[in-house]
Image (cartoon, rainbow, N blue to C red; front, side):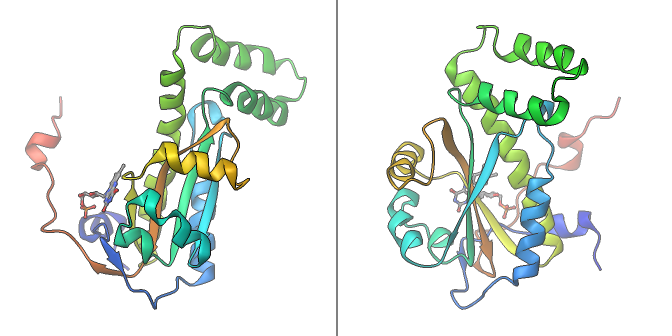
Length: 208
Ligand SMILES: Cc1cc2nc3c(=O)[nH]c(=O)nc-3n(C[C@H](O)[C@H](O)[C@H](O)COP(=O)(O)O)c2cc1C
């Protein structure tokens, strides 16, 4: 088997997918598990995934993704939801309940989080951005794990988040204290775009 560095060197973002290919269920479960196990700042449990299978809902949501082929034809498509500025405090409390209950360790940990996040210094946009960052870690992990399973992916940030969010709330699939920050397509790639382009190693790394 190739090592992960080789897999990451070879992997490419899929611009389109084979419409007849279905990801084996066990592989997809492994990807979900890896996403669930991704690290997050303070360990806050603020994320959940909507898996949009092929079918009616995939078609209905297509305009929010500007009908990109890698959205339309993916075997599996994931929308990563996370607590936004309205929901982050509750997500933190929920996490602390599970992690510490009423134990003494809770006060110090929770106090630190509150000082950093909820002392009133951060705007709603900064809190949203904080939550959004966590979702990119989750999709980054999924990118690597999928590559290790020979499954092609594309992270998709090119969507109308506001309109998609409103629609998901209307459909009862999302709460107003959540936001769809990033999304991701999985399947067997049929199209990539150009040569892989990365910074030269000497420009990318400076060792001191
Ligand atoms: C946060 C993020 C958002 C992206 N959004 C899109 C997108 O909306 N549509 C798309 O086709 N590719 C999208 N991509 C894929 C990038 O275009 C791709 O990773 C980049 O061009 C490098 O190509 P490679 O992954 O094949 O090496 C996105 C990638 C990231 C990390």
